[in-house]
Image (cartoon, rainbow, N blue to C red):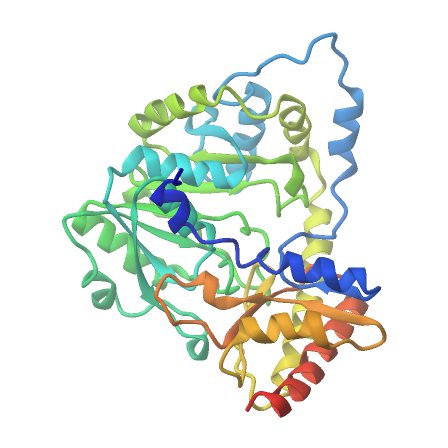
Length: 398
């Protein structure tokens, strides 16, 4: 019996596809420093676990399909504190930001509609578009230019009668790029001119460095009815396993219809919602320290890589990833080689080949995405392993 074309055509995660090689490496007693996945090692705020421990009930019931009211009000306060007019009725709680994105695509797109996305982009944008039978229309941004958006007219050429939305990650995964008001204005004007939605994945909103100011698409009131914000506590509060995300929009029609999807999957995890509702009480000092730590890590990794003349890498301004273009033909082969053939002090590194973050075939083949979600000493060791490993690899793969 055969499987569906939908599942056969979906790609495996480039972030996790090398797991079998990693298992074999660990089986040989070699420790792996994981720079392949955005799993923060920053401690989750204690207030989250206290709320879990304080829960007492004889029955763990379904919760409201929209999300429990305390959490929606907590998130409303979070946005209000940032200066945005977001009410609890503008928010749907989802199983991570991933479900928010999937529900958005299912709500605004019909089969074979198109969504325009700058590449490289978070690999699951491809996956969720496949599930929703939506076509990804990519446009290229370049490592040499810091992955800045091209001219508006270059993006506009891609708009067709099938185009429903523009989709961005800001700050960017996998690039670490942060779009400023000028960048966003290009998208805002196109959305108005061509009657498009803009989906803005802002799960890394807090992680902006070098004293830059983050600009959200919520800062553009002229498009408030067409902006859809994808958000999550996963990265903000180092709570990836909680699977609490949100779909946020002032578009009442979208909220009321996306609720059908929330009802179909019943509810998000009740306990995690109760705990997440308390995160609004986390001290602002938490973010000051976390941002300082990530900026120092970024500098360690970036400075080490760019000390090698043949590696092309622009300093990322946000999130906790960077893309590096290597002087080799196939980064995936190098990633496998590191796991199978190279170690220093009984350690090696797991990296993510960047080709999986592109939709256009052939792009990113010589690039890797690195996450700096490990402590500074491990990061220094990892950078040395990648650099020395690259030297050794090139001797046999010219």
